[in-house]
Image 1 (cartoon, helix red, strand yellow):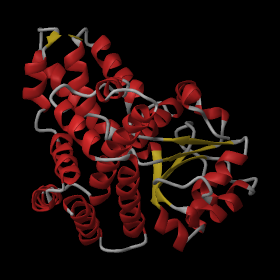
Image 2 (cartoon, one colour):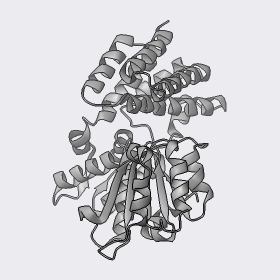
Image 3 (cartoon, helix red, strand yellow):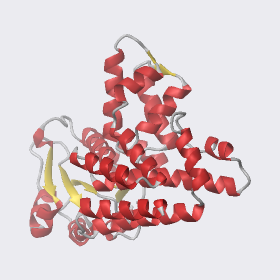
Image 4 (spheres, one colour):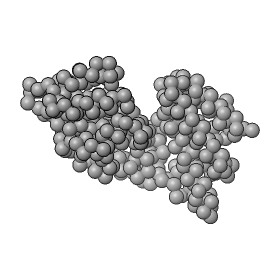
Length: 337
């Protein structure tokens, strides 16, 4: 059964109405948060390392009997027995289906997958069976990201103005875990002070990776090949994953595409920019305005196509760093030509 974003909150409070849940999508931090919430709802002491039996998907694929035994085991503590499977792929679908068909396999299973496509057999198994639940975990953007920030600030009685909120939404959102960590950092920094200014926000999270990823997008759109490659290599050397870099770039060019569509409908550049959600951070407006004047929708589509080709190539086991740099070179070279 596919759980909609609107119903996700109520599901997380009462996950026991289903026998298993699949969390999938690109936001690994949100998957971790949801997994913790479900575990806490099902067992009396989620901090107990014995509260859940954990498996890597490769272990289950090589020895399915381990899953069957864990799903049939009786808890000695009286709680619901939970099995957690990490890094799940479509190859796990037939094994799980067989387990769910076994009457003795009744324990709760939490499956954590990656960015599974709509036709994924694993997604299909969970979305079509009413006793199972499938929840997509996507990057917080727009109103969703603003709600996460506002919820945290409301809980901690923190106030911020519009410019400060625009800055936060431009810097956060790639990963729910990172977002919550950065918001907690703000709360600790403010202490008894309950008003967050833009200056303080920039001081606390101004060096968040998103800022440097934005700079890569700006350089790429300007056709500054050496600058874009240098910053990309620096980010990867500091631990940024190529897929994360590519998705950040896609996000920027997606926003340019949306604004360009508004311009095709007769909106001015400033009007088109003002329609974007989340709002364009005022320090980024000169870049966005310049790129909208330089790039036509057809060229933006071509750049997005190359970025998606790069992600697909990496997922098909091509060397991630080399592949990322190769495609960025192709994009920047086209812009410089």
